[in-house]
Length: 89
Image (cartoon, rainbow, N blue to C red; front, side):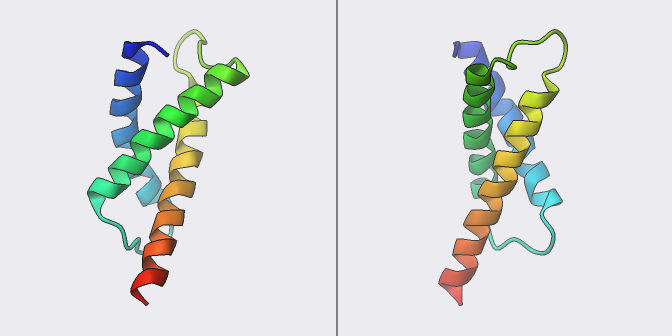
């Protein structure tokens, strides 16, 4: 992964984290900065998965890579929100 890929994953991660929070139903008991952090991590892991699977470098927009990142972010935000809800209860 090149430096431009990491930088792009960081920017995409910001958006992906917020989208994951919007997609999840109900109220998430998680701070926005943690949501963004989960999105960034999901973007980096999603990029690595897409590179390993061979669909990271396609002409145009890498839709499958973005979908992979979004799914990882939704799972991550949901898991952390669930852990924080149980911890506070």
